[in-house]
Length: 250
Image 1 (cartoon, rainbow, N blue to C red):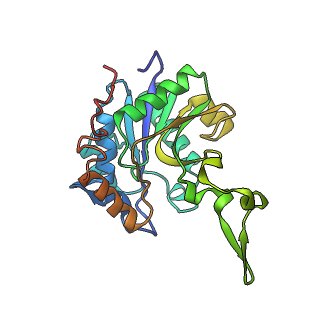
Image 2 (cartoon, one colour):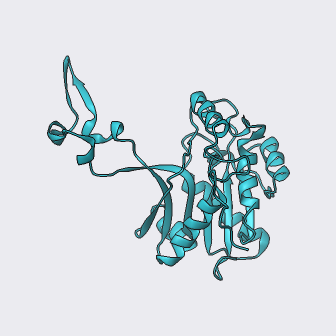
Image 3 (cartoon, rainbow, N blue to C red):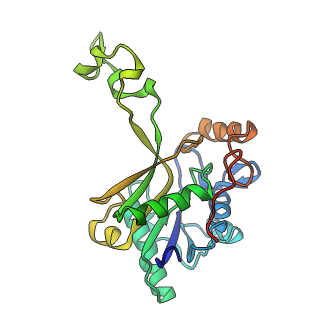
């Protein structure tokens, strides 16, 4: 438990993927992406239950190998590329509450496609959720200024111009307001928010800014980029930023 709150961690991992076939089983530094999720969750003893939500027996077996429970397979209706992620997590929550005969207060969503997360990232997100008395907490990373909407261009027939009218007035990146992208490192959501608001972006949602390098893998080059980050010391093989002790609760 975390501050008297019962915590369920859900690792969503469907077997079909268009960008990278069998994506969640792809190896990174010798461990599958599912394995990376299981290994980092194993560093957090205050999590009451760690479960993989998948439609694949092979994925379920992989999850068990890395400490994830797999007592059910996801229904086919929740295994398509248009299935709602919220519906997937709601299904996992209700299934585990029925099986365990327990009610979980906080649900953590740990996507295998963001393998460079740390135990400290997850703990910080959970703590922020509770300290802020928020409905949910979502990890984000600073958006590189070159991708800022005020610097984005569009082509109208043959004419190149700024996507927004304000873009023309930007003369240097220092004048750009900071923006962020969601990195999939961790979503922490209260049970009531998930079941009543049906979202991980609750009415009261707080941001947890991750400053160390992360990768959210959708395309083959992003898997290679994650490997590059590991080889160049962005995070250790144990899933910690270089020089970080992790700050894990005991």
